[in-house]
Length: 163
Image (cartoon, rainbow, N blue to C red; front, top):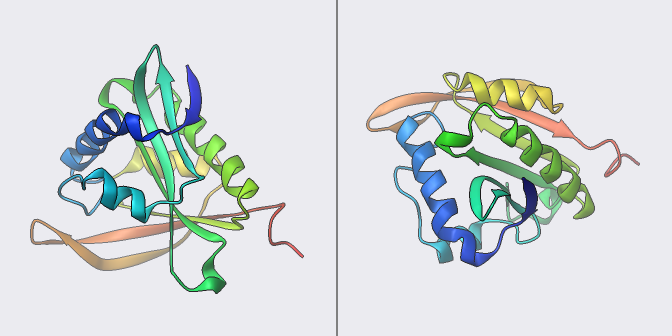
C-alpha cells in the first residue's frame, strides 16, 4: 500500500468512500457527497492524500481551512475516511500521520477534528497520532432532525508556529 497525493481522477473512488462514511450516520453532518468542484474548492490543494493498494483506493484524508480570516491560515480541519473493507487495518493511522507531515510542510500549526461521540474508532485514531480532546460542542448540528454533539480534538505542531 502507498500513501500518495490525491488526484482529480481519484474522485469517483474517494466519493464512494465518503458516501460509505455518510451512511454510518456518525462520520459527518453531510447527507450527500458534493460534486468534485464544490469539494475541491473547500479543501486545501496541497493536503489531500489517498491510501492506494493495487489501483484501489482504501481511504483518503484532506484538510479544509477553518476560517477565511488570515490569522487562522495555519489552522486546518481534518477529514479522514477509510473504506468499509479497509477499516481496522491501520489505514486511517497511516493517512493521518502523512497528513500531519504534509500539513507542517504547508505551514499549518494546528489541526482540529470534530468527531461524533459515537465514532469511537475515530476518537481512538486521533488520540493515537497525538490529538488531544479539548471540548464538547453540544447540539451543534442536526442529522435527519436529531441534534448531535461534536467532540473537538486538536493537534499542535511541535515544529511550526512555536516561536
